[in-house]
Length: 117
Image 1 (spheres, one colour):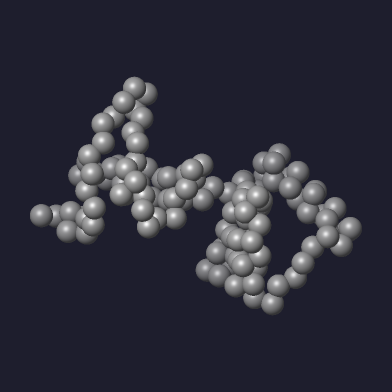
Image 2 (cartoon, helix red, strand yellow):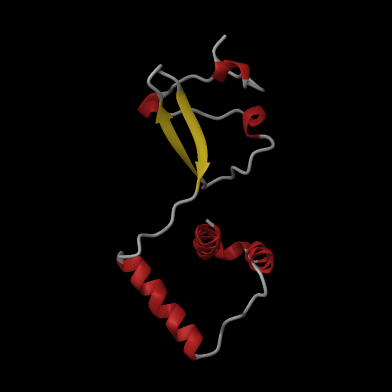
């Protein structure tokens, strides 16, 4: 048994359908942070294994969307529509409290993660 197979906790079988679609079984997703609309990174190893990992996408700093978000942030700052946090944990709690703003939350979480490196 190879090293990867020894780490297997749950095994299910899925069928590849038209357009290479698969359905991930509930037993596989249980206990993971993956939700509808999330992204998975899919990798192929040199020995032919397909690996899937949850991932977050962030907007490129030079994109039109990033520039728009930057302008909106600058306007909020000018209008004093912002909050301050004493630490990253307080920021994360506030981001999680506002689930409707998932895209902004993902960008904020990525910034906190990058700052902590």
